[in-house]
Figure 1 (cartoon, rainbow, N blue to C red):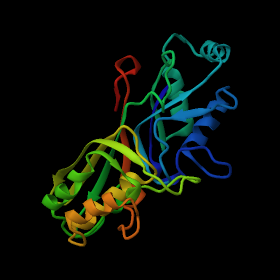
Figure 2: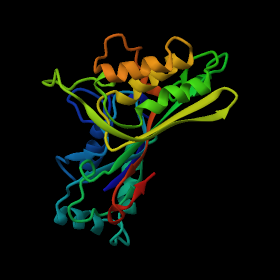
Figure 3: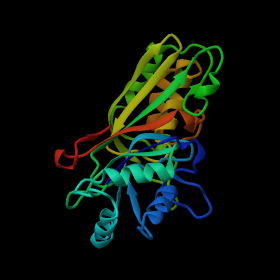
Figure 4: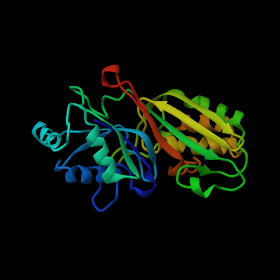
Length: 265
């Protein structure tokens, strides 16, 4: 199992796709260079194009004989897999870094064993955007009413049908999209910087960006906090504000049972 961080701005999401440069595709390529052919990756959260991660969790099934052969080519190869993380980082860096590598416990699955995922979203309200942050921060320009942001965020905590805040998967054109949000709040980082943090057992496609887009619209005075409640109850994306851009979003943590490492952050 691997702990992976990446700058997603140059990738077409995580999942390997023919003809597209993806984070998972780069990891598969690097594993192939190291002698692991046709690797199949499973990740905790399939991030979209332009979305970043500090704490993506990935598992890959590797034949024991192949793994022992790789160890044998590394000086002092032992039970830890630090060398594997370093080798993958060398092959995929600087945009992708593998900061943790180890053998997975019996029955571990990076996706299905996860108990919660946590995302962060960075926003700048300064007069001018910072070009050095253009891939990681949404510059909205102009002040946001933090009290209104918090009022508009409170209703999304708990178990709800988030159909109004999700892009439906192919083949599922109707029906509820129920998710349980454990926590959602805003952090003031300075005079012109805000961060949104949200944790849930699972997220549907584009859910965080949709929530941020609606709540920011309330903070700008374009919606009322009650409009966010109405949108949530409607079960429809009709009339919803545009999505927040992908560049401000980052997967910052994944929680497992203690025997699987607890919080990966």
